[in-house]
View 1 (tube, rainbow, N blue to C red):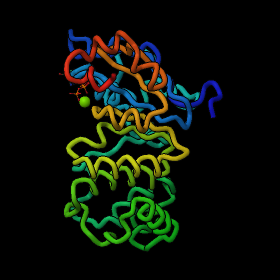
View 2 (tube, rainbow, N blue to C red):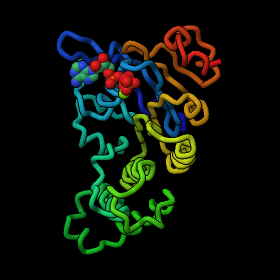
View 3 (cartoon, rainbow, N blue to C red):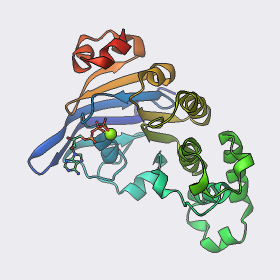
Length: 255
Ligand SMILES: Nc1ncnc2c1ncn2[C@@H]1O[C@H](COP(=O)(O)OP(=O)(O)OP(=O)(O)O)[C@@H](O)[C@H]1O
Ligand SMILES: [Mg+2]
C-alpha cells in the first residue's frame, strides 16, 4: 500500500497568473489508499493546487506523478482516464436526469470507448449494475427516479462523489465536500465519504477541522502557496508554524 512511487506525488509545483505567483513550490506526497486533508487560510491556493493536479490549469513549473506515472502537462481528460477524479460541481450533474441515470453516465468511464451512447440507450447491463451498486453505497436507492436537480443539497454532493466512484476512479479529490451543510448533514457526509473511498486514495480540501481530524490519516497545511507542514493530525496540531498561519478563531480549534 505504501510502496514508493505509488500514490500522488507533487514536487516543486508552481503556478503564476500573469506576474502573480499563487503556488510557490508545493511539495505534497499522498500514499496510495491514504486519506489526506489539505487545510489552510482562505486564498492560500488550495483550490488552485487542485486545478493543477486535475489538469484544469497547466503548471508553470514542477512535476505531478500519479502511481509512478508522470502526468505533468496531461489534459484534464487524460488525467481523469488515468483514474483521478474530482468531485464534480453541482452544476455538472445532469439536473434533469435521475439519480440512477447520472450514475450510469458516470459508470461509462469504466467501460471506456467500448460504450457508445447507443449501448447506454440499449440498457447495457454492466453499466446498470455498476450504477446500482454505487446508488446502494450512497444510500440513494430510494431516490433512484428523482431528478438530480430536485435532490436536497447534501444528496447532490453525495451524488457527485458517487459519479466519480461509479467511474472507477482510484484517486478522488474533494474540494470542501461539507461546505454549506448543517451539523447533521456533515456527519452523514463524513460517514459516506469514509465508506465510499474505502481502498481508494482521498485528497480533500476542508475548512471544518472537526471533519479533518476525524477523517484524515495525514494533513498538509498550505499557506501562501507553500506546504508549511505535513504529517499525522497530532503532529500538525502541535506545529508552531501552523498555529501562526491560523492565528485567530481557527487557532483555538487546534488546541
Ligand atoms: N484564474 C486566476 N487568475 C488570477 N488569480 C487567481 C486565479 N485563480 C485564483 N487566483 C488567486 O489565487 C489565490 C488563491 O486562490 P484559491 O482559490 O486557490 O484559494 P483557496 O485556498 O482555495 O481559498 P478558499 O479557502 O477561500 O477557497 C487567490 O488570491 C485568488 O484570487
Ligand atoms: Mg478554495
